[in-house]
Length: 133
Image (cartoon, rainbow, N blue to C red; front, side):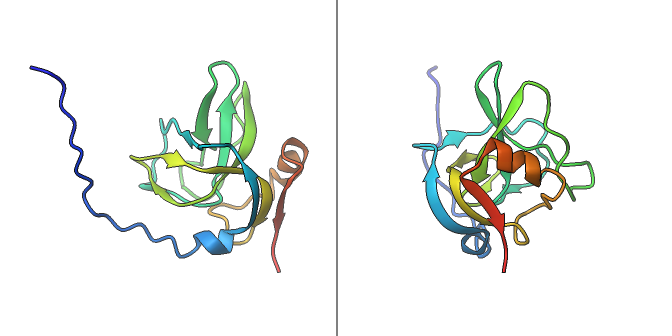
């Protein structure tokens, strides 16, 4: 028997009300986006503004790890680099995301505080600013 795939997309609701508040000005991103490796990601939705990293050894894109309490980013793993932020909230089981590397992000509305990594993000992604008014 051949392989089967369900091509019917069941309707689901993702609350994206914060997306336009988090992504304040999109100037540039990775063409066609990327599918993220969600191994170890515990939330059901990856939200706009979540930091995206890339494993430099195998060219795999992933969400920045979050602590076990789900309240803050962990440290950047070895052999990884910052590549941008998620543009639109998506279900974690369908992590086909746009990744912005140039533009303005509302750091206060982002899913997790970035104060501890803001300087590193500024160095790695100089065209991406994290501001709020």
